[in-house]
Amino acid sequence: MVSARNLLHFIRQPDLLVFSTIQPITFVLLFSFVFGGAISPSLPSGVSYIDYLLPGILVQSVTFRASMTALGLADDLKLGVIDRFRTMPMARSAVLVGRTAADLVRNVLIIGLMILVGYVIGFRFHAGVVEALGSIVLVSAFGLALSWIFAFVALMVRSAEAAQSAGFVILFPLVFASSVFVPVSSMPSWLEAFANVSPVTLTADAARSLALTPGVPSTLNGAVAWIAGILALFVPLAVWRYRRMT
Image 1: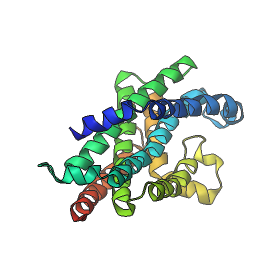
Image 2: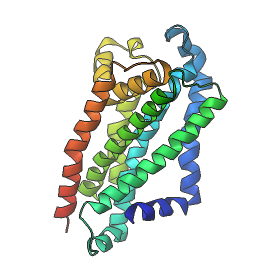
Image 3: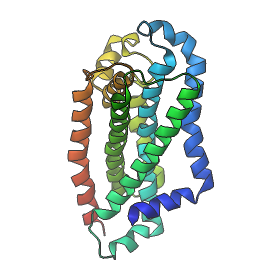
């Protein structure tokens, strides 16, 4: 019920629907055509920039969209929607599960749209159908994990403006100091060390490897460990905070 309500709320806002789809498509087109010529020489032999870029852009998209969970919850808190939910006979976790599940569905739809645009400008899954699905599932799971972080953030700050600012501070350096757009080997050594253990880099590298080459990526365990660790920490934290709210 909560998930359906959140999805309907999203669909009934044409401006939000349009800009939520245009932004990731713009990233794909701009980075591919503007930076492709400059970055292509630093890529492994035989790998085009669009093939390198798109899996990273998928990770970037779900990472930035995770802050939308915080904005949505903060808005519901301000409007009293959460208070009405709390009076209904439902599990305390249902509101949070419904919100993050709805955001997961939106992420999957936008991932599909971005892949379609990528195919138009030359992207291809080279490793096969199973690996392609694995890449999509991994990126979606990463987005879900980040949504739980921002669900907790929203319940702590209770303000859409503060939630948005927190999202920028946390996500901006994680995305741009990663392998989303460029190989980390091109970065200064101190930044490369950070990027190599970043959850964004590990997820982008694993998703990229699944998209381009058969077999199990070397970074897959690290990406899965980050996803599992985030969920294990922030799902109970968010539910605990929700239960303590007055």
